[in-house]
Length: 212
Image (cartoon, rainbow, N blue to C red):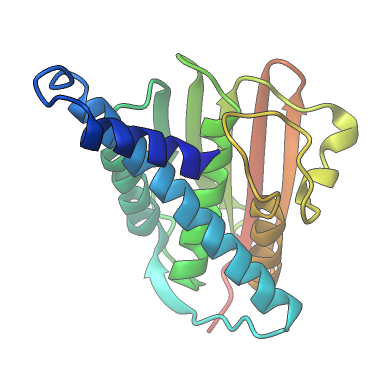
């Protein structure tokens, strides 16, 4: 439970003798920060889901250099998760050019995919992002992780609302991948999963090089 972790860590910082816990201050601070980020993500997922339910989600698209955008997202992720014990990598093809996207919504998709990759992998596992052109005017983005994996019968179900078929590190809303599907669909794209149970999972999506 994210809020419980924050309360316990905060309690230790407030109630303990500073001298006795001086070596744990940074560790406790990192726990509070990580869990707060996850709560923020849960809230955003719930708000976005509500907008979809009410047909109130509007895309604000503009042309961006997609390589720069995703590289910046990845660097921010590394900075915010510098203590994460995973093997991280990124591969971006050359000359991808411009794509019309809603930057905040694409950020939401990437955040959910990386959050899942972290949640369902373990210490020393790999998380990799790959981005390349697909059939000339389409962009393909994949987030891969080693770890728990998925059974074949769950590969479509994970994109349904409130569906949680894995037991990862911490609770979730079961909305993340459903929201990813809605956002990608709103961009005219598709999203899907590939996996081998007990070994790896890859979530990929394709976006068209659509005009605004």
